Length: 195
Image (cartoon, rainbow, N blue to C red; front, side, top):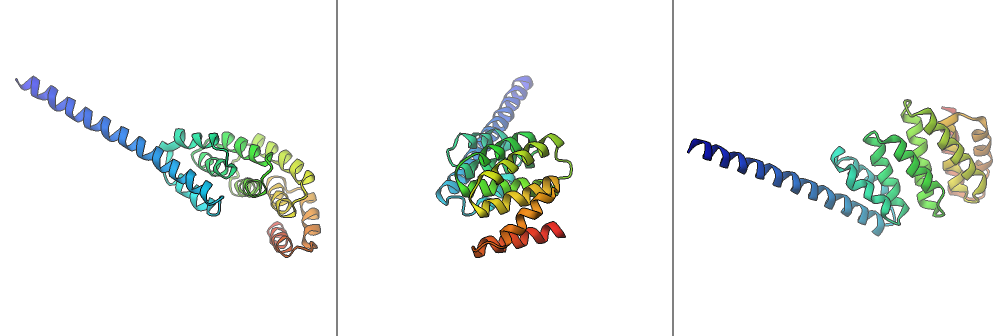
C-alpha cells in the first residue's frame, strides 16, 4: 500500500511540475508575442523599452524570440537581435542586424546601426569577425544612402567598430547640414568620437 501511495504522490508531483513548466513556456510565448505586437502597432516608437522587456524575460525565451524574425516588421528584428546578443547568441544577433541594414526602411536601419555601434563600443569582447562584417556593411550603407540621419548613425557605428578617421571626416561634413536634427546628431556623434 505504501508503494502505491508513493507512486501516486510521485505522479502528482511530476504532473504538477510538468503543468507549471508548460504554463511558464506558454506564458513566455504570450509575453514575447505581445511585445512584438506592441512594436508593430507603435511602429517602433518605444523600441528600446520593448527590447529591454524581451531581455528581462531571460534565457528561457530564446526559441520564442527567434520567431520574431518571421515578422515582416524590421523593428521586431532589431528587438529580437538585441535580446539574442544579450543571451550570448552574438553572431546570430549581428547577422540579424546586418540584414536589417540591407532593408529599405530608414527607422529600423538607424536602429540597427545605433545598436551595432553601441554594442561595438560597450562589448570589447565582440568577435573580430563580427566587427569586420559590421564595419564593412555599415561602410557600404553609409556610401549608398542619401538619408543624412542614417549616415550619422552609420558613421558613429563605424567609428566605434574601427576608429577609422574617415568616420570623423564624414561626421564633420554632416555637422554643416542644413537640417537642424542632422547637425545636432552629427555634433553629438563628433563629440563622442573626440571624447
